[in-house]
Length: 154
Image (cartoon, rainbow, N blue to C red; front, side, top):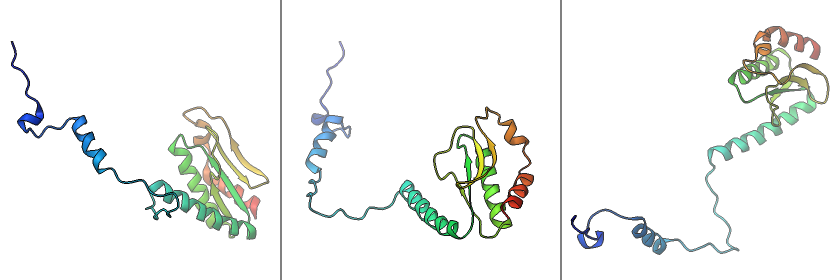
């Protein structure tokens, strides 16, 4: 017959059970804040900071859009290749055409989509519902596409 277990409290072992730890938590729980008291300023987390930066960037791009043209690049987020091409279009168009602002995904993008368009106007290129491995997008010569768009904008 196996020997009887000794209780952890009697032996003084360092082992803590959930029930023992829960008893301490109840005692140390902080009091609830009053409803009328102002909340202290919280540190911004990574996601919160990104949202704030996106809002500032959007406000800045609105000011630029009033003066010049605004190009919208809608690039799917399921594959890194879309992002690479979208950033290439943004950098090259902004350097080639003065006074143009390029925005990548101002709204949630469609799946398997790469579309470059003028805001509220002409669609320059539209590749929709591309299945993997996105051969139509990979066959594109992005330098030629960017040159054509730059010529149409000017």
